[in-house]
Image (cartoon, rainbow, N blue to C red; front, side, top):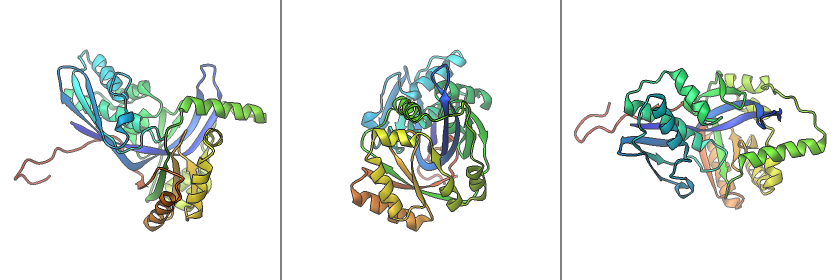
Amino acid sequence: MTVRAHAKVNVQLAVGAPRADGYHDLANVFLAVGLRDAVTARPADRLRITCAGPGSGQVPLDGTNLVARAATLLAARHGLEPAVHLHIDKDIPVAGGMAGGSADGAAALLACDLLWGTATPRRELLELCAELGSDVPFSLVGGAALGRGRGERLTGLPVTGTFHWVFALADGGLSTPVVYRECDRLRDAAGERVPRVPEPDPAVLAALAAGDARALAGALANDLQPAALALRPALADTLAVGEKAGALTGIVSGSGPTCAFLVEDAGAAGRVAAALEASGTCRAARVTTAPAPGAHRVPPEPAAGEPAT
């Protein structure tokens, strides 16, 4: 069984004050984009993980990988042994703030459920996703959604039209916990009063519903961006290049270090990507669109001589 799951961009990431447990309440407006990974589940005598594709050398192949944790969690729910070979075909940038690992976890959960015939109800799959990580439930759902709590409590959002994006990939990653700690430090240093529970921006929600790229560009916001820029100052150069090349706006994606540029159309996306790659301020630039679906099964290839369905 092969399941695809998509990357995400946070069109709003509002971060509340630290909670007693060290986490932060969020108003996290997710938008699924066209970059995607695929996870294939096959019967095996034990749990085994393999990976191929860009950045696959950075992907752990042991029990710490979310695909292994997903298979183990689902097997335990149904009293099974997690005897499965899970192969990841990577295309989402690794450690780029685009939820590639979360997408793989959601894809593995669905692929194993299909392979084992366990027919887990959607509500239970979402509960398991939330156990795996804050971004994993959205990887299962896709489209656009508001994430509350740590981002795992989802409310679907209306989204129309097509949004064009360019993602500038950086060398190396940024640790999400470190970025959150830096965000708290910067706020404390500035004496900033931060609400415990932030709210979504109505302008972001209206722009998604209307399919209005210019309105969305004017409303994009990421409370983690100052921290990401403080930890990786070179990202400011990347943002400046993309905006000078014609992007409607640029923003650090999630906790970074990938930078996301919202552009007018496919032509503008090509021009912005070319300028970014020529500038030397990023490792590579990827062009894609949004919205994209949640995790879904890929139909098997037809046998030789059979018509495709």
